[in-house]
Length: 62
Length: 396
Image 1 (cartoon, chains in turn red, cyan):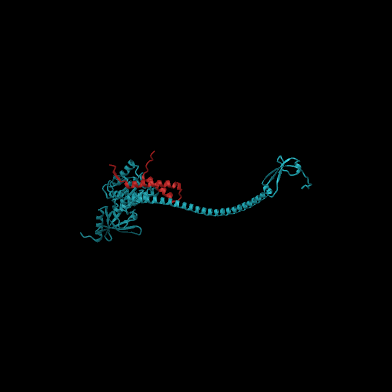
Image 2: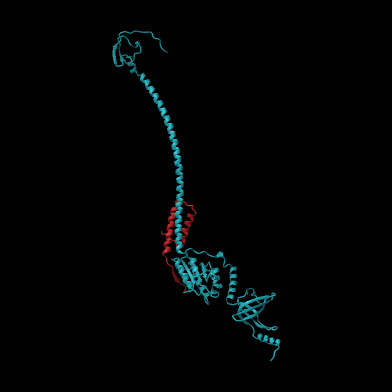
């Protein structure tokens, strides 16, 4: 089953949570490597989205 | 007709009475209170001034009147008959223009503040990366173009729903309220609303100080960011909003991060994680190295001890073996010496009876028995021809 794609907020929040764990330096090496890989995937997702997207303006109410 | 002074003053005073109440607008240039009872004021315009007279109990809002304020004075012209000084006896002095607006603003601000509309605790936080934004501002305005320009420069991927509103003048209040209602009914999933306009006078910004607009913003289910006027302009909508921006451009800066900064932050995060892992591995390696070093030293000591022990054991074994070898050699020599061949070699012989028994005495044979005698280099077969007995003492 395909996982629901994260939005920017969720992805950034998860990345920041991973970073916080590493900032505390209380890491378990067995878990650290998979989390680092996860962080890299999140970073790539964010960077790709940030670089590519344009804004759209729609007039409403009339 | 010739008047006396007092008659003339009386005449003019009566004439002025007939004018009735008038309203005169001017700027207060002087205001003073005498003995806590009488109020003397002067108002002016560009070319003239007018003295105002009243009583402290008549002017209820006296404390809000200040020099420089534009006011409208309602009163009756009169002449002080004693010296013919002309003044307007005021029944009411109200702020006019910006003064009035400022007073009304302060009164409403106080009232709404006491109700808790501006409490910091009720301000909602905004998402870091909004994706859907509602925008209320004037079409083709500088505020609109500034806001959109900054947003586009900082971040992409946004869907902006623009509801054009009137931002000043008659109809502005209803226009803004309609916009807020629209978003709160039709687009409740927006991340935030932005209400913004450029700078102007207090009168220009009046719609954003209207109580109905302020309450509508307060009731919005969608978080509101307000950027009304310039930095120095603080409207009531600014105070009730979840976040206040100083200008339309500042509103765009506050609601979205610059993607360059975000990308830089992400790069920093990746580097931090990588460095933390490397540092952790290095620390563990260092521990392993220390353990290995300790173990090596221990092994060396142990090897030395074992080596010493082996030497000791080896020496002991050697010594034991040597002793045993010597013992064996001695035994061998003894055995060799006891070897019957060596006895025979010395000239002795062994005689056997016919049945093979070794003859130890002559009673074991009789005359005529066949016997064998073993010598060093062979055997002799013979017969017993005679037997001679000798007395021997038995050994115990």
